[in-house]
Amino acid sequence: MLKEYIILNWSLILILSALSIALNISVFLERRTVKRMYVLVIGVFLLSICVFAEFNIPAVAQNRIVRGILMAIRYSSTPFIIAQLIYTLVKKLSWYVFFPAIVLSIINLSSLFTGIVFKIGEDNSFTRGTLGYLPFIGVAVYCVILIILLVKRSNKKMMEMVPITFLGVALLSEIIFPFVYGSDFSRIFCSTIAVALFIYYVFEILQQTKIDSLTGLLNRQAYGADTNNNPENITSLISIDMNGLKTINDTQGHAAGDEAIETIALCMNRALKSRQFAYRIGGDEFVIICRKTSEEDVLALIKRIERNIGDTGYHCSIGYSFNENENKSIEDMLRESDMMMYEEKERYYESMGAARRK
Image (tube, rainbow, N blue to C red):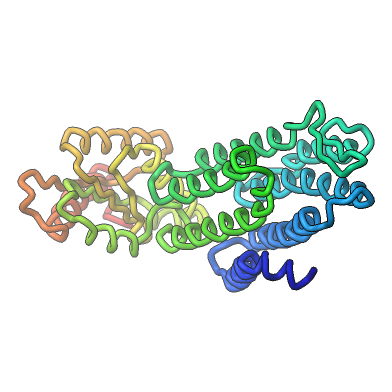
């Protein structure tokens, strides 16, 4: 049996092993997230053993009780794994996310005596009960909730939507395909989950390398890469620099300064629309790249940012460059937008009656 299990699940074993190694050396994920991912890995591995045993025990009458127990475990474990996935990937959720899975498990296990979900006949035949589709509905609801929560916490940009879409397709296929291709498709549920987890993890790590850890905006490395990617589509650059950060750091401490930077970044992120991308390229220095955007839309974006920041009590200087005739290089545009931004900064400090301070 061990040999058969290894042969049939070798790809699953390799993927889970690779994910475990990657988690162990990861520097981008919080330790709490890593620990929860390990729980997922162990859960998927144990479930794979249960699924293998269920589909490989001889279909004879004396095995019907064992088969029923294994089926109840599989039906009960699946919602727990999706709940653990939600608990791992979506921050600030309590353990209450497992409550529906607990209820589903009780119903599934009670089916061993009531046949309410499934029944294994004396001849080892399978029959769905009154609530025979409840396990699939429960898992489908969990999957939809997971996708909704991931989309809600994302910035709705392509780099985040691709892995979320991939994960959603992988999970929902495990609910739909058994009805299309038969129950044998359930045998590869664990492998599908493992592949989806590993791919999502890879996307997440790739994304973290492009994200500024303090603000959640794109970082300087991403700015360098993106300005080299189809620069002819970049119609405008916006330079933004916070005013008074040094004063905040000197009088209130660097924690207050970090909070100010985070607030400014949030104001920018809320103002962005499609084809507009914000980057933190320095301490309190930000750049927004606009692709195929009219000057009218650029000015509207600046007004939204100014309005959002104005509600916070902070202040920023903003400059922009618009490439109307497509004859400016990225360096020229950045130089022009910086010059406008610094001129506004000088006017701000002059109006405040103070020497310019970062």
